[in-house]
Image (cartoon, rainbow, N blue to C red; front, side, top):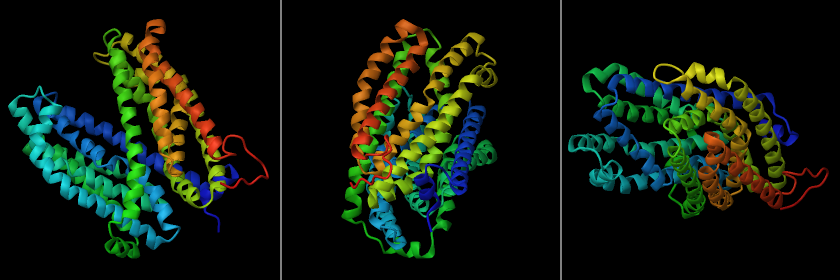
Length: 456
């Protein structure tokens, strides 16, 4: 019997099951975004802009740093290709491979967390050098119990990757929604008694709840396979070789965001905020649209990359056009409703009409790039699935240089919209290079070759 995802992609369309999965993941992600917004509003309302909130914000950044150091931030992209190639369709091997990765991160936690506990005051001092002693001590004490979150999320990500391969998508995609929901409930219930510690406790409890939510989906044989697994060099070696360039690519994206803010800071007052708000609004459909589709098709892409490159090329071509069409519709809708959306969301209180006009102008330009942003994300996963992670890394480095030149020069010619225009141009260059390399590595992806089977 043909797998619904594989069959849908090979036919160049999408079955009802595929679209239900994509819509389910999109809904899960949307709930996560909504609850994250409620979470931030609740923290602001409960604790205000005070030294305790500053301490929590800095402390909550520690898990992100740990995820970068430990490669845990690359789990979702790197784990699935390793799981599919090592398992070969055997569920026992799938869960043994997952168990090897889980135990690898458990060992890393045993090494990193004690050292981090001791060094935390120094790390907080580096991240927030302007804190007074009271705020720095609070941030240190909050950060210590938050640090293990990185490894809990890594383990949840590995289990989620294995579940995606076996056809479970929605519940693993709800992990951040669950995390935020528990955090919100904890603040509401106990913030009056323990203050900002309720946010830290809620964050830890929410992360553990997100992990516990996916564990029941593991089959009984899967539990046994995980327990019997070992930290194998044949699993960890390929994983690290794939995860390192994945994380380096993420670092370049983060640096690009810093450069964007630096360029905006050279413009009139309010430009940094306007660019940030327009970007956040524009990237919601990118996150909900392309990320949902990527989540559903990525396991099948990784499987066919390891077993049948011809079908892999056909699946990539179909996934690309599905994403491009869906995001083009979203981009057109975003462009049309940009002004009404901005007026509804942010034009209130101290946020003036002139400031809102800047956001509208920026949002319309960002909206034009939605198909570019989403298809570039898909391209990155294509190469990750094929275990060619160096390609996205090199293309990110190559296109970063013209981006820096454009983001600082275009605003002097066209004003504030030069910032999103710089991103559009650099992403167009990157997408063009991606398509050229895809056709070179996988003939038939860009230019369909009918009735011709190319062996790779």
